[in-house]
Image 1 (cartoon, rainbow, N blue to C red):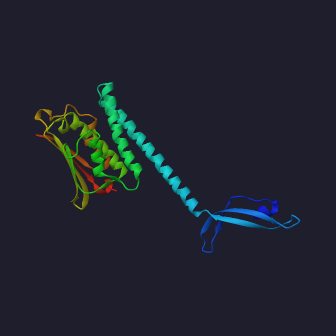
Image 2 (image 1 turned 180 degrees about the vertical axis):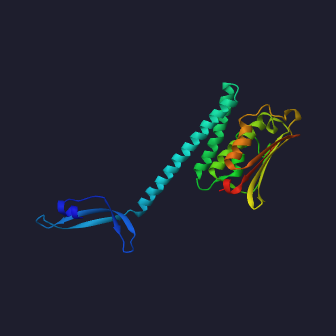
Image 3 (image 1 turned 45 degrees about the horizontal axis):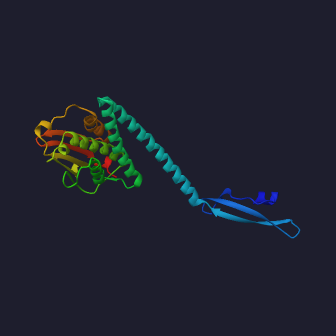
Length: 260
């Protein structure tokens, strides 16, 4: 206001901070306008104050969200780079590389879409598994069934598990239950207490697979992801068993590390 009076001009949206009697500080916008008498002399001013507390909070929240977005983008790019590199190492042809790389990016994109819909709610495990199987045109109730409690995953855990389920589904479509007219996949999950540590146990069980199709042709991206990457990133264990009827995969993870 002093500037407005001294320079005889209105000032709009000058930012300042006021201190309350209790010591708290309040940001505000001041818009002082000089008042004149009949002769034009300045006789005072009127000042409009606008509390900016909520605006400042919104700006700080926006900064936090932007920082989180930048962090996620960097992480996602790192994951894509890793997928590209590992897919190249395990692909025999350009066509093979393009097909597998596209499928894995699709799995990653589905998880990212789920995270974006509600970043704080977590990703439903049932939806994660179902969406991967449905992406291969598998029919729920006929070719696959799901059973387990309503659990929601942390974004990073959902990302890794989504890729793992994608690899299991890819294998099932090529060589396993989803390649057989009488085959089916059952996915179950439950929480277990082991020595005071709560763990999430996921079981992928295939049935109806001819015996000649049981053994994997080679160890590739999917096997490495399931037996090395997933246990390392999520501090869990994975067991793959090729038995009469089809593949069984058991994944055990610490609940506090993966659940929302």
